[in-house]
Length: 215
Image 1 (cartoon, rainbow, N blue to C red):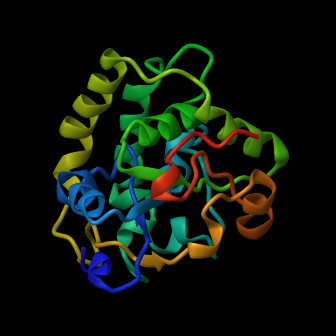
Image 2 (cartoon, rainbow, N blue to C red; image 1 turned 180 degrees about the horizontal axis):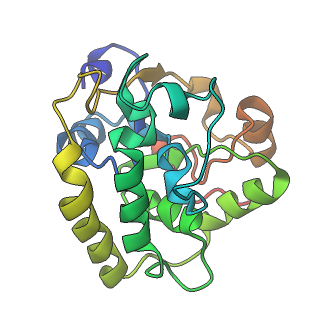
């Protein structure tokens, strides 16, 4: 929360996803009151929320998901949102099948993030053009229904929340880690965003024009 106190700050990057919901408890309201945009990073919890990982998934030794699972190198929130891998897999299993018809698990997770009015944009990674297009498509579907939103809340409460620890801890949920001033990008184009970030965003990063970004 300290980040929004600096002069000239227009946006803040923060980790927020189905497994890491603590920011909504207080930070979102403070940022909204200060008219500061929120750029959500790590929206798929290190790939857990893609729905493609299993207990047999193996990560390279230089992959943070292999060497930082317990916060050995830096904030554990960067790795699977601070949740033990096996616990995360179980939680994803509890979410699978509740996503809107025609949506992948990853699209469901991204659309869930955009359900918050406080969020200006999300920046998921994409390994190829197909994934980038799938990410961008989440700006078009209708809102997630109450039943699916309730299931996410229930899974988080029962499976994920017990692993949340105080903000700022290497092994817990940290405060916003990156401050961004994007005065020169009030109305970014899809092409420009892809070129500059190699990622897809699904809404304009400006708080003044929080509308879906269409490709």
